[in-house]
Length: 254
Image (cartoon, rainbow, N blue to C red; front, side):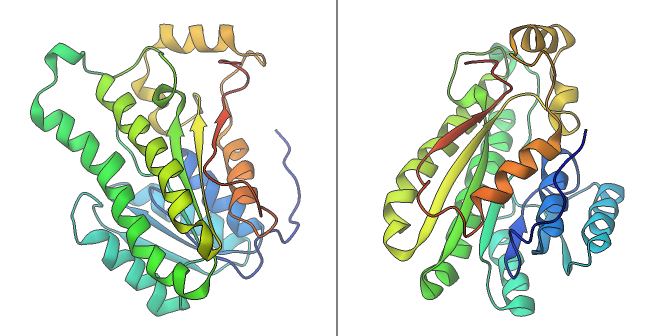
């Protein structure tokens, strides 16, 4: 699959991506670097994937910060954002991508299962938004993109606690956009369909077949396709889209 050459879309931007060691997060890091951004990304356990991401970023000549930590730790968001601000002065764009999903039937979910998903998928995103907004408000500029899922907006087969977490992220996106809009900060969400890598392995094969059968393009998404959309959303060319949840699913739910 071919993708556009560098256009300088994000030249000078300081971008922080959570969950950047694989899948969509890794692709967002690569595209942001190609477009001229300095890229910081977080990761927790996938050391090999983090090394690959760092190599992809540096291959484009971009500065890179690889930040290891568990965003379920309440102090982690402030610590990671603080590390970026100490190195580069501020964060211009945040992409909340870190998430977890488990294919467990609802009646078998324990409280710990639910809490684990909500802690990373929802509360960590709240904390990273809060941490970067202090600097964004000061500089009267910022972009935040929350990676959601079609499961957050539509009735689709999948783990109930995951769907609920993504619904919460979309509510965060819409409400926060109104609160921070006066400061030149735009907040959007991408409701992603099924993409190669990442959490695709947690989706049963028969659900994946139903997805591709329903897709207008009859295929799974390439993570770089999400990276291209996110790069525009966090760029200065996006001046009016905020509070929106954008479906990126190859026409599956169209």
